[in-house]
Amino acid sequence: MSLVAETPLARPTSPARTDPEVLSRSRVAVWAYSCAVVAGLILLDVFGELSYLIASSLLALAAFAAIALAYRSRTALIHLRVDRTDLSMVAITYVAVVVLYRIAFQVIEGQDMLLFLFFALGMMAGVAGPVVYTVWGRRRALATLGLSTSNLPRIAILALIFAAVQFSVTFWGYDGLPGIKDVITLGAMALVVGVFESIFFRGFIQGRLQESFGVAPAVFGAAVLYGAYHVGYGMGFEEIVFLCGLGIIYALAYATTENILIMWPLLTPLGSLFAQFEGGDLVGRLPWAALLGWADVAALMIALLVIARRHERKLSLKAV
Image (tube, rainbow, N blue to C red; front, side, top):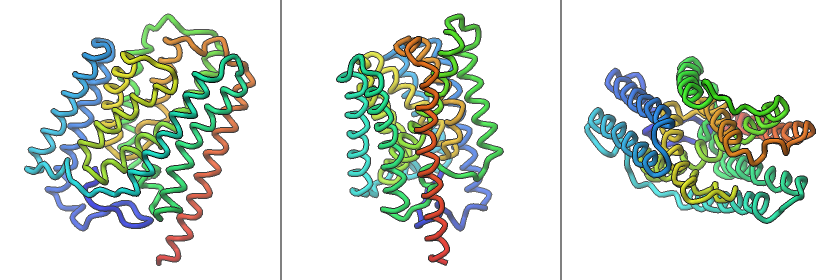
């Protein structure tokens, strides 16, 4: 967990990073968040809607309390360093994504090509907006969006644990699997949507809220925005309440490493895929050709990230 201000084109650092006390406190945070995430994922099969939101909130508060005791200060979790430009960009991109999704899933009916177009535009707005704003607009590193290859062993272990718990609660013994075509096409969609959600909600929204208000407000704020954005899909109030609870657990998972690899390609896509199987709205609707559409969107995302990475390196060399 990062507790220091970022520097341009560099991941936040601290001269006290190797201090044993700082490291022990960091371990406390990872353990606290991880235990809350595992418990929250297990409770997916126990509670529904409002009760799950309450349970998730209590787990988050328990994790924050443990960290506050370790740091002996609430400033480890809450502060006020408001960046109005960041918050304005969060608001603009969030509204754009929700509006585009709303058009795709609520306005357009019976026109699958147009639906896919606006769906893809929503995803690209949620990836391109944060990346361009971060690297070109604010001259920050992609690592501030959770796009980094540091600490991969720890990330891989935690990602596997979280995904295994979620899989055991959702897919283990599940007898509602559709045909192979739906598994593959919906799986591809879940992977692409997972990239968008991980960058947009975790790296960007949660990251910017954390920089302005601290980790605790960021977790709850990002969770509410994550749940509410599903209004674009046409989901009802009870579903959104449940997704706010799930958003808290996903936000805590991201907080363990501040790297989107903790969310993707396992945790978020698995959750999305299970939701598609359970909801059934797109089951049987996606042709094999949909794979080409998801591949196009993925290619655009990758191309943008490659260009951004090159620009980041170029600016880093100039800074040196």
